[in-house]
Length: 250
Length: 319
Image 1 (spheres, chains in turn purple, brown):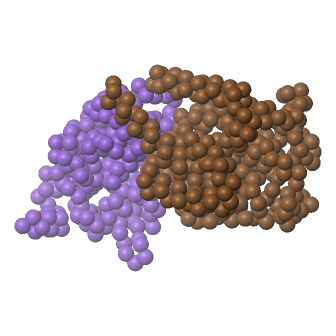
Image 2 (cartoon, helix red, strand yellow):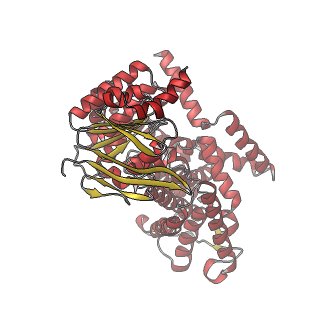
Image 3 (cartoon, helix red, strand yellow):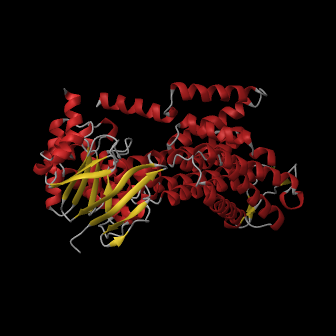
């Protein structure tokens, strides 16, 4: 059981009569890269918000690092090592890339991590940016950075925070293809060092390229689960998801 | 970074030195005027924390400025406490009011917070006027020149004395607020201003972050008032109402909301302008309204931010 980082059991979210998330379960292990895909409106972001604590569940249970966090507020989960990025970007645009990563070091301290002296914060933050290949952006205000770079800065912040699990909310949104490949490379490298990732995206390319395990959501429910190769050829997925995309392309 | 720090320290030292020479070269009127400016530097630096940094629409300046003035004025006039003690009491009193009121108020967002903080201002105003025995009444109460224990019990009666005491208080406030900006707490304020969801994801307790900004502002506004009341002969309830609030708001907007240096520049410019406009009754309201509109339309970053940016790009071009 110690092998399980995040265990989501039958989480349901209802808005009045509408069930946005219907009994979803997910298990993420340390160092795993887990993907959730689904067409727009499938309930992915709502489901994500219940994991990070930004939305209450109507039913179900969420366990993180062996603790029941179902009713813990978002900031407490963040202090336990659960970090996330945001679809529209969680970077503070008027701060520099470096200052944004320092916010991650602040988070690590709030989590009770014993870090080096504050005076070395800038050096530590710069090293983190360099590890992700965006050291050159350090002193630029984030508002002037490309979308892909901004996304990497946001990931750097979660790494600086010492996160055990990083939730990536639509990391591919608005990101150039080469930047997207770079993002996949970085995620794989970081997962190799033990950080787990859970990402959602409606574009399958990034999820299929990065993830070992994929769950497909539609209308709030899980319709398929397995490795990318299996998902790609699953008739239910083709029907519910790829079908609609294919039709739109045609 | 180190070079930047020393550059800033050098600028501050130079400004301090020039300001310290003020009473030697300026005539009495300007010395008096600058003592008022110093009080408003404290006020603006304090108000900027909640409004500019944490981004909360807390229209609280006049209420807490007035409350600090009331506590300090009452403490010296009724109980004869030394001036230093009165300044501490005004600061702590305002902070305690800020903590108890803010604990409820900061749960409200945007316009609701604005309305609730305005209500506090009117409730305080009502209390000053209607509970005369305790609070002072409609015409307020006389504030005698307090004795300074640190100056061997001397009274700071001359404008020059007050100038130097005010200067020290303003510089202390500036340095403390400047230091505050480098703390994780202040970085948290900048995050909640942008996006509270992101703040929570960074482990920031949004409620406590909002509250801490509110209390820090309360305390500094209280200090400003506690000192300001000594520059006047009376505590007057009407001095701490809507007029004062709009003036304070204008200081921050003109200087540049969210910028500490902008707050200082705004305080200097607007206190001077207000004094100059006193000779034309009624004109200041119209003019200040026009200035607010013009700044919002043409220099939304405020005068300080805009001029500083121009200066930076000029320097880069030269270099």
